[in-house]
Length: 269
Image 1 (cartoon, helix red, strand yellow):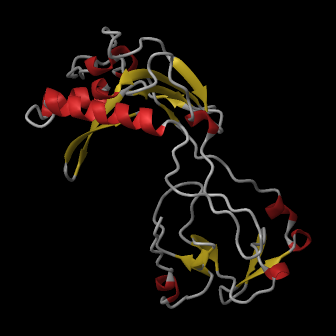
Image 2 (cartoon, one colour; image 1 turned 30 degrees about the horizontal axis):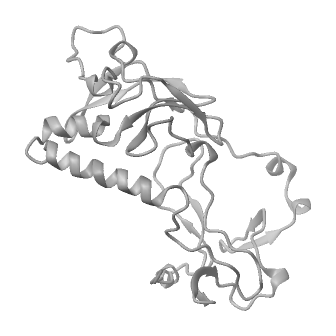
């Protein structure tokens, strides 16, 4: 597949050009952030080998044993960073560990009782009917579960592509666009894709090797995201997530409104 790759020379046009730099523009207020953030600018270049195009790191002539990133760096007075070994790092720093973002929000099912809380007087009940599964010819009422690599549990149901909640809502909002004929053509296209492509269609050829003979891999997908359709729903059906529960998450049970410069917006807490 032809590819056009632009190398990132623009990263080196700044005053603090180099592989390492500090960004003092981070204004996020969060216990895991600081007003200064440490950035690593990786110089990437295209490499053409055996008729394939790969993206590789330009190490600038450094020997193989000099390549790579150190676990620890020392910041000098002029903001220069030099790699150091673990034995040179104060013990109070080596004991630090990366943490997860706190207050992770679990995504609850689209049910009114699960989202509106106890204060119902000032509410306009949202319409979650697009998630109802009464016609089993267009949806599967069974709730399936899969576990992601971060141990989150995802609950989902199978819908016929044209009848998934997204298109049910768009049909109401834009009836002149999402007509029965338009959705029918879309459904036929998805079914053809599923039949013709299956699970073995290659969209990007996997690189075979490079000059050094190292194996190259494109990417790895979270194993929990790969699910198999039920029997009879192999063509034209898609999984729709209805709930996500994180290992350390909290359920969002209330919705409130808050004033913003652009008007009143819904928020959760």
